[in-house]
Image (cartoon, rainbow, N blue to C red):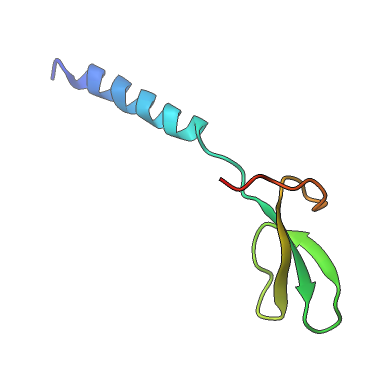
Length: 68
């Protein structure tokens, strides 16, 4: 029981380090198979959509992101 506070502090620090390293999801331009409409989204919109370009840093799909 003497080591319990140290274990809790260690776990909290490890979690904080992992949470700080998280990055936002990239944005992609998607094109509709039905009418050719283009939209920008972070996730697939469904079977009727094809990923056209990306990844982008912003929701307007203007600033290209460097792929890691």
